[in-house]
Length: 285
Length: 253
Image 1: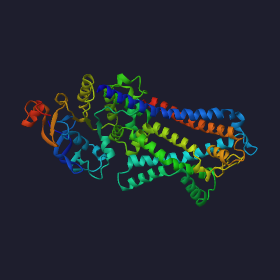
Image 2 (image 1 turned 180 degrees about the vertical axis):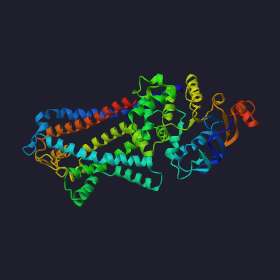
Image 3 (image 1 turned 135 degrees about the vertical axis):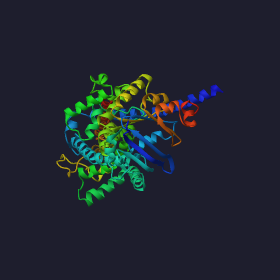
Image 4 (image 1 turned 120 degrees about the vertical axis):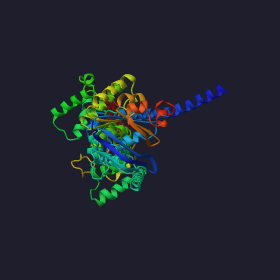
């Protein structure tokens, strides 16, 4: 009997372990695949030049700048709105119909396919608000798409702040706002920051929301204002791989661009993790 | 000697939703004396304590009936500013709960939120509060280190210092030593004795020896009712009611 039970335990653990390993393996294989095919394309020229010869040569500098510009707008829009919404939902709002409705809205926003965000952005930001295909339209579209992620991360971080901190602060004659501003937010900040950067790095790789709203097939110009159109890394990959005239010839450039994109995303995530570790150490949480 | 009542409640009822947690509680608290609230778990003593600085306001669907007075003013009067009330009626919690900030910032916090801006003044009060809480000598060389690096007993004295910094007139203590070892507990009890010369202290405790050691008066709660209230010496040596005697002699609870 005992033997059978132990065998079952062993079997279950092995399966659970295997499931966990699949994650790591998938990532490792994908990274290996892209690095092994893309690293040859990476050069100083590739990172700093504009595309030449119908995008079969030259670099991807405008795409890097474009993606960074879009992400900046996304961060600028989604972070304050997302954090404020989460504070409202978690700290201020009295539970009721209105809050349930807002939550329902946020959850549904999270489930909307990215292409729908793209179409909405085209209809609303580009056409109704007359912002055209621009960094502003694309960034706002990505921003709305990222909001649920930032709200979720912020709510988690706020929930992780023990109520005893809030009580201690209120018991000293602090107002609710002082308590949030000076005790709750600083304690939640590392979590908010990490969650937000993860959300933004996710947005950095999105193609569908920007293909109608911010990114263009080709422009040799760098954006000089929020209302300029840009090239972007994910869209560039899509274009090279599907819409070019020389798909086979540009294969190394496609992998090179993909490598730069995942490098950028990993870089952001790594920054988030390092920042969090540093702040946690300082706060000793 | 003439008694000076700092705080009292009159026929106080308290409800969580529809369930009544406190029934008709009337207690008066002498100024600069220690009053202990004892009774078994769930008897309402902590709920009662939290009525006195309106900490229960944070819970949805509560209702308070009757009166609770501080210096003859009703603390549940709608025109009363609850922020000011909590500044005047400080609180120390069951588990030490220092903020994840430096030792200095923990004490300075209450001053800053109450509008003290002068740095020299803040530094002076931080030192004074830490001395009052008998922890200055242990932390004076590490004021800028995180408060979370202190031991549990030190953290609790830091929390007392933090509460003292805003110069409260009444200090509510909710089982302040229940999470501490005997030596740290002894230090907290000595501190209570020391502070009672200038503060009205109301302490909830599970520990009857502690109530007997630190308090001047003791109130015994059971099932949301005040059973007996008397001078501590009398309550522990000649309780009027059988129920009180059973509890303090350990026959139930």
